[in-house]
Image: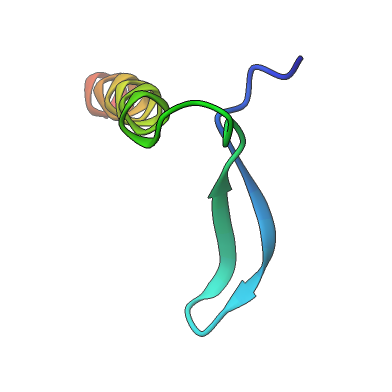
Length: 49
C-alpha cells in the first residue's frame, strides 16, 4: 500500500487535479491525514527558509 495520501488524476480548469487516495475512509478522517502531512511539509519548508 502506498504512503501517498493524494495523487494527480486528470486536469481541471486550474491545471493538474489532485485527488485523495484513501476514498474508502470517512472523508473527515482521510482529509485530516492530508492536512497533517501538509502542515508537516510547511513546517519543514518554513524552518529551512
